[in-house]
Length: 244
Image (cartoon, rainbow, N blue to C red):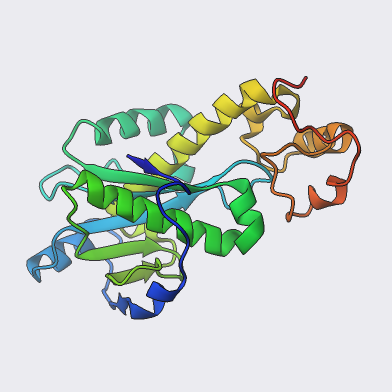
């Protein structure tokens, strides 16, 4: 299940109500944190991560994942360390092995409105709420969140810098978020092929930057970002679809 702006509105106030945990990780066992929390009665435990903070175009996408306690967690690693083919294989596995997950996103105009950090947290919140819906409306008892910032929800949470390398649940979330965002950018490429999103997925490659300079930005570009805002006033900015 995927949640976007039509389902949930942004709210920063719940973040101050979350409870932060301090849990030791084990580099050799990326399910050690989850296992420790489960033995303490915190169930279910979910991992949360996002993809797409750096691009000049497209949404930021987050995933929230509850891995089955008995699953083989070892294949799930940081999505950035995996090939596109491996990510697709693991994303398919996560949809077949009893994993419960939700996806959330924040669109380009939402990113411009609140900044990329707050939009990422909004996408994470939407992903958690979508995961809860997929889990018979049962919220996770604890969130393991990649990065330094907690999700704006009143839930027990542990933030983990480089969390994809410490938690299989976060790694699995990073895979689903990346695969879903890549799929969205491939679809958007069909509407705006001049930017090369099939290849660059909206990231600031030399070719993408040049395309923005040549054609101006389109509605999917993040106009608050350097590399886009300089061209936002161009008379030739693309507003329609299927532009070449």
